[in-house]
Amino acid sequence: MRTATVAAGLVGALAALTACSGGGDGGGKTASSATPSATASSASSPGSGAVTGASDKLQGSWITTSGGKIVALVITGKKAGLFVTGRKVWCQGAAGEESGMRMIHLTCPDGNKDRATGMVDSVDGKGMTVSWSGKTGQETYTKAEGGKLPSALPTKVRQ
Image 1 (spheres, rainbow, N blue to C red):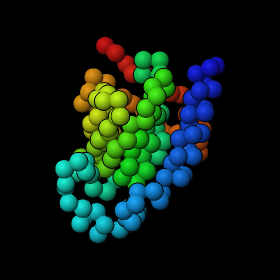
Image 2 (cartoon, rainbow, N blue to C red):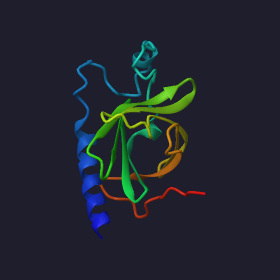
Image 3 (cartoon, rainbow, N blue to C red):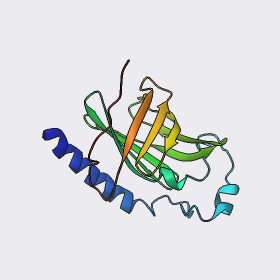
Image 4 (cartoon, rainbow, N blue to C red):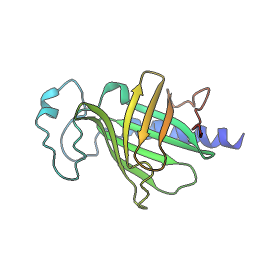
């Protein structure tokens, strides 16, 4: 019951962050996928993540569990953020198309690299599977709609 309460609060906070994240990038660019010219002029500069436009399918709040903790991945425009319950840091980065693949690049202030680079293996309106280059490996996420916790949280299967 305590996990459900923490998860519900986390999803609510993430929904609020997603709703408020539109205007603070200071770059004057919009996150709209309807303007391909904005992404076509994006040069791959060091540290930029080399990510172009984020797919509409990646947008939203995604939830999974790993090691008994809730993992929340939020993608808005080309920005991505990740929070794991029990950790005091919020990892940030970029998500989108890169060399024909959907990629996620995150940097955590504590130096954790478990989910630094992820390749999206599959995504649809209900779920997303990401293969992380760190020790985390592959995770399956469920989409959180309207600030509500999904009815079933996926768990990482260890073999």
